[in-house]
Image (cartoon, rainbow, N blue to C red; front, top):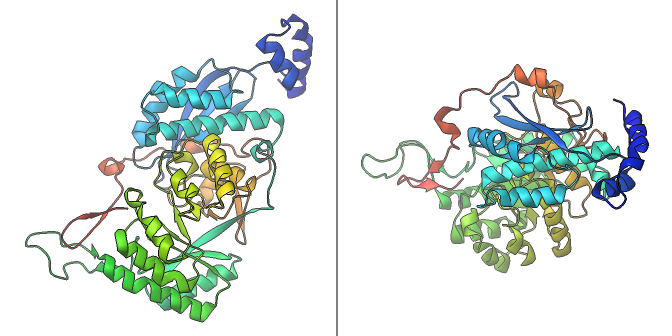
Amino acid sequence: MKRREVFQAALATASLIPAGSAQEVARRSTGLPPLTIKDVKVITTSGGRNYRWVFIKIITSEPGLFGIGTANNNYQTRAVIAALEDHLKPWLIGKDPDRIEDLWQSAQMRTYWRNGPVNNNVLAAMDMALWDIKGKRAGMPVYDMLGGKAHDAVAVYDHQGGKTKEECLDTLQKSLAGGYRHVRIQFGGGGYGGGGFIPEGKGDRPEGGYQGAAFDEEQYVDTIPPVFEYLRAKAGFTPKLLHDVHSHMTGMNAVELSRRLQPCQMFFVEDVLPPEQIAWYRNIRQICSTPQAIGEVFSHPYEVIPLITDRLIDFIRCRVAATGGITPMRKLVSLCEIFGVKTAFQEGGENDPVNQMASYHVDISSSAFGIQEENHFPPVVHDMFPGIAEIRRGYLYGSGKPGLGIEINEELAAKYPLGEIKGGGAYPTDRTIDGRVVKP
């Protein structure tokens, strides 16, 4: 049924709806009949690579009207699928998709123990799909329902690095030539913590103990600042430089690294501390002005609030799909605006195009926007997700279509099923020379 026919049907039945009823209020406010959720479909795909993507499609009582969302969790994928299929779906069917705030609050309390990573993935998927439905029905992109564009496009940062400082400079210049103003530089090649590893089998180790590459904090603190000093000496101070420590520091080593990087005028240093050690951000603020970003591994949508209100950080790095969706994140970014903190939503690695678009809508409608992480997808993913965002010369552009502006080609997605989840999907961790696990 075409939307015009739906509208005509609504007019024809208007006289049958009791005055003052919820149905009458809905009709007067939207001109359309009330909606109900008829079905929830879980869609999984490897995306043609080794992705472990999980999406939902919420199907409504209006023919052809549905919304999509992502419950991306690369490390507890099967748990998320079960939570969607066995727990969210039966609860959600029959409810009114227009009541986004009410459904978000109710869904969070539905599990009694709330704000765990899996539950927030489920919340996020539902929330994105509901915003997608509302935007499609209104004929508006989600960002217009959030107040419209606050700026022209969403700036993104590129990922580069090298095994030597000269290689780092070469890759930086490639990004600059491609139109990027913001570039994240990692050092040493392969994984995080590069520049801070004692080679495999080297160094004084406990007998019969760990023999792999061993991370050493003090070595990292000595190695990384000279790399950025070199880049500034050769490329100047126009490029916006970023670096990801990936939670590998503790205590005063985090403070000292930040202090030594201050002359390099970083755009930000990411996750210099793990979430368990965030009190040390106060010490960092006391001795240097190196901008700090954190939040990638946070799951509670308001876990970062004390860091914002005390102005101990400069950027929040939360992932929309991991922190409950658009509804909590739009509230959080309003708080950021009040306290002068900016967004830098996490998008790289195993992230998917739907989460990228959800982040885009929050970012482009917020005055607290700072930067968004880029994510490039293989060609098959561009075919799989019509309306996928495009990156052109350092900026991310959405499709401008109603709702999230992106769809899923289910037939194509089904051709790339989830592969075997080896080892339960565990995230790899580094170790110190005595075998202790380093926080990722």
